[in-house]
Image 1: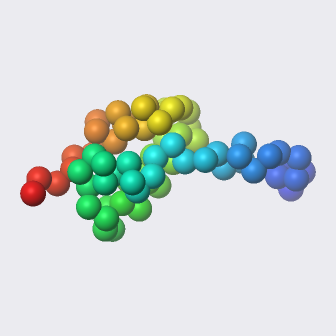
Image 2: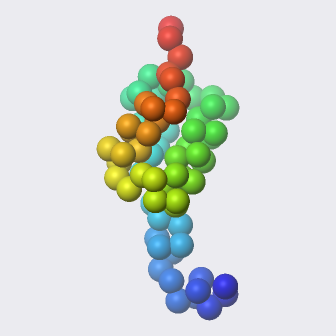
Amino acid sequence: MLRFLAETPPEDVRPIRLLTGNDLIGLGFRPGPEFRKILDAAEDAQLEGSIETHDDALIWVRRYYQAPSF
């Protein structure tokens, strides 16, 4: 494991997130406890290969989470 971490670029070990808090705000979410849950779940989906692009991430959020109505 240590050898893998030493030889692998950081972006391959933990790639740049495809989804940010600003994306969630743009989708109608308000900052709060749900943000972290959504961002962590999206990162897991990214690492598992379920989402590969920013557009995939936006579609994924719309599919699995609903922005609150105000």
